[in-house]
Length: 532
Image 1 (tube, one colour):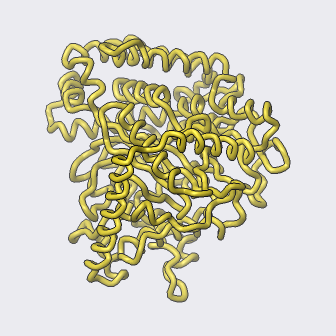
Image 2 (cartoon, rainbow, N blue to C red):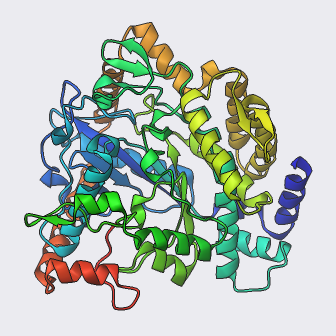
Image 3 (tube, rainbow, N blue to C red):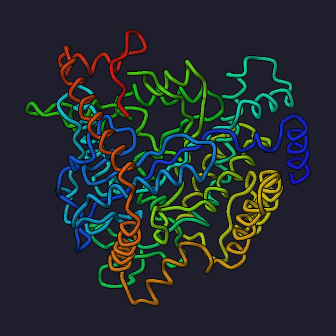
């Protein structure tokens, strides 16, 4: 496989300049809980100074009113996205008064589900729909899981790169069709190899006992208030987090754009007996949007998603059918508790190398049997990834030690890194792969191992460790206040977002019931406002 990747890269670089490898767009979406001084989830509403969570382009909320989400504008350079994320953090922290941004993916003290306030988006139909969708998540999965935070990395390849690959692979159809085919090939390979990310950059090997409630999760006890997996990497990505049992039976196909849309649409349009028992509207109050397996597309969790920029009101599946895949969303990164903004450029360079490898490698369809192995591998790495004896399912029924497989993949990624380093000062991509190799060979260098080592060295439980890091990062970021000009931009953007929300509310003419029906049936009629 190494020689096949080398040939594919060489063929690509004969058709495009190395600079083109970097010219696709990248963006970050980073979630962070607002917490009180003692590490409890903040009960205060989304601060008005940040404008409207419904319409602000950079600062919104995810599941909870306390779960902030920061969105960077698309840029071709990784550093530009990180700079934007840094500026958003500095702005937000300068207005949080006594509150902090929680530095870890797993939530802080959970004093019962009622203390995780569900996000609100105003009185418009779209605002109500967003809120009710989140109520449905509560009824289906519980609020604690929805308070978990992570970083999403949005990525697209440049047009010249995709056109060169199209010529290289002899595809004669429209570039839109080839791009979708190439991105789905990438997605299938990322399902196969994406466990490298939690192995190396998972940073949630421990959690607060309050997260578990009265459940017996089979973890070891680190301290009175902390549970952990000794070899764990990313409990966020395990069966207690996003890879939950409730969605384990979903069989979403990644064989093609058409099969993906068909299988996802089937889940969105098929009623579920358990959700029927919950009901939709009970005693005049909505519990969920519908009783289907998935309320809407975004309810389905995956390591990675195909994305298209949706028009106003367009369902994600319809946007994909219309435009094809325009970019992918990598959802496998934990928050790095040692970084003030939750990640760093070396991590993103590693992910970029992995994405190129997944694009260039042969990617056959995923059979049901292979899908079972993929899901098992992802779960094993999340809970036991640093176990030196861990073996994964490699091909068909063949087993391969994780360490051997990881090192083999890193050899292939080193070829990609060398290509991405062409024309750059130094060898930053090669360094990212070299450091990853050192971490595979000595797992004490992995992020999850460093978290546990710090907790043990400081004799701190999870809450004490994360709270100390949150305070440290707040001091560091507040020590670099934005300029008056930068603050003025945030102030103007917040004001504009409030005006936009008021305009949406004033323009509503449909009842909410009619609005919801139109949204769900929009493939046959004009679509209302979009609902992420």
